[in-house]
Image (cartoon, rainbow, N blue to C red; front, side, top):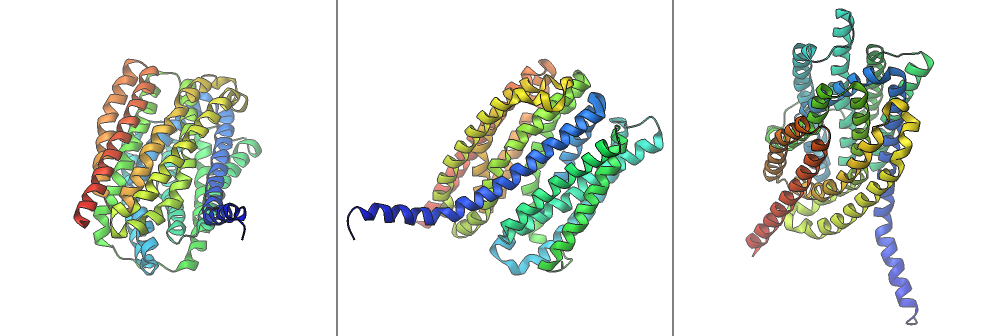
Length: 431
């Protein structure tokens, strides 16, 4: 072998080494991007046909239920993903564990919503229609959505990323099809009319997905008691983060017009969808981190460093793309939503601090360090919520933007300081 051939052989070996991971990431991110585009199309259809006022109310109920859906199941999906990734024989027990928690917590959340939310939102002047619409939205966006999302976690736990990707894309396209049929084909132009279509869509998808899931094995209905505490530790940061992320929507709904709320709500959804590029990497990363950190969190540190550099690069690229495409959003959603362009361009850079702390969070979660993870995220969200609320009330919406960036960067700094401390502690124990 000549000296000139050696570098080529090394390059080929490196390509062969990283090609499967690259292809997996492209498939994962591609599926999430397709789902994000489908969601954007769904929102565009609803925004045009419901009008600014009705669509603003839809954004409000979505904000409320997005908090409740994290309570439903009490974090059981992460426990299933982590335990099944380590030992697939526990899958039937973990599936039954999740179904029990979803049934109990979901029923309590729907009942609480029916008692509390009539004082906050109203969908129709007719009391019966109003109550029926609220019930449909709660069942759809809490119980049925949690069941559908659990399917993705099951397949990721089994390292079947193709099936996980198909579940995400299929669900997104089903919602888009429902919006097309409801608004364009049947002329639905009220939020109470859309409630029925959304419910039937989610019910159909949940039924199909769970028939598809049964080929992996039937559930064993018992509580895995040692996972309840860890599930709560895992779920609470998402609950508080969802509350922090939606408090601005709820307050702006009281301070600004419905059209502005609709614009801000869609801008927020677009920015939240930009996180999918990072989430796509984390979906592939989590099972690997769980295996590496089984013998200590320090064993996952080399992979965490590489992942952080990749995540920040993806975040910067995504933010630039969104900023450049934002001026064209009004062509999609209509002239009622002109302020959407400004909101999107200001918020699109939030993905950068998100990419910083999300990798650290994945490492802690995969290593079972849910207590530290929950403490930091819960503290950031609990302290950040009143800051965000006060800033929004004081200077809407400029104060909202400033506080969002301040909170995200503060969480990122706290996460990485704690992660480095945990790794040093683990190395000291090993020595």
